[in-house]
Length: 183
Length: 357
Image (cartoon, rainbow over all chains, first blue to last red; front, side):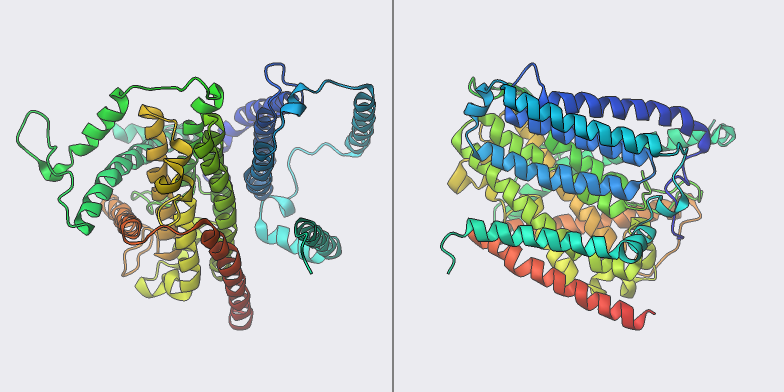
């Protein structure tokens, strides 16, 4: 048994139309679920919003698969949909959020929201206009965990370690805050 | 008639074989699920010195056939009971939760190599041969918790809610231990592809990874009990404290979906353990990919036999051990298994670095 390539067993002739269709399906799903997460006309239930966020994350994982970033797709589902959102749901269910359900928009919230959206949109436009259109990612990042590990631990070792330290600090902080009687 | 298939377009062949594999795996799994329910009842009866359901055979005859007709009788009962929806439930989630419980178990089975080939090397006996197979599995397994959490939330009453909360904490905790426990396997094999894991163990009984990684297997097995909500860790539905836990308000086929989902999850985790630790489809004397149809079917049979043995272990443990207390469960997960798994990773990494370079 040799190390295999994901696309090996899938003949190329069915790839292009299927890929196009799946791209539009997943992007549509991502956008629709993202919208329903923040602006649901049928329900103001926070659990419903959280569930739509889960769907958004899963459909984004679908987009990663179409880019041949299999590792990223699996980690996206595993970490965000499977762990982070479950904890969110946990907290939402434990808190009594009736107050939130009734809340209406205020001028201040609308203003800050619009500002944040504008900044992120500006950032996106700048990045996307500078990016070159490529049909396929280079062989180095195509879902191979070995190559990904090499890049992470050689080229980006310092940012990677700093990030893990940041997570550790956040974890210690959370434990310290939750233990009030710690001597 | 069948000869003409090989002149088809490869794309059409691929679609046809994939569809066939999906249908067969789904059908066989559903069959095993209902068989497992009967096996559970018979084995529990045997352990408790009772007789168990041995009467129902083929309808309208006197043929009892080991009581296997009980499968049909149980299914029929679930379908025909009144499907009662209390008026205080959150309806959408109440309908959604049983389905969400069932789906992940079947999605996990997609990456498990349940046989080598059927004589033709281009058509391997795995639905999706992913390079990140194990990560895919953990991703899907981590989605399984939504079914139970939403069921607890949808029921909108106290005991199911407590069951849902317990399950989310329990499943997340043990997912970490489970994920950490398999890392040594992939350090040894050098690939995340489950086909490669089986290939590494294809030299026979002595190459099975359970001998090299007994600690990993031990942690994985116990985490699997917790992930499938089986006794000794069935806290989310413990009937002495929470009535029925997350499925208290469910009846008829909706309850059956939770019930069958538990067994489907069991089959998925047993298949996973067979693949990771017990050589997958390879017989104990070792094998390479089959070159004839019968050898291929033999490999599938070996896989199923090992899976059934693991299922019997699950059933046996359920009827032999008492339930843990919730704080004991959390303590075991976080303070025993996670450090043990980390230690195992460290030792294995050192061994691999020193001996295999």
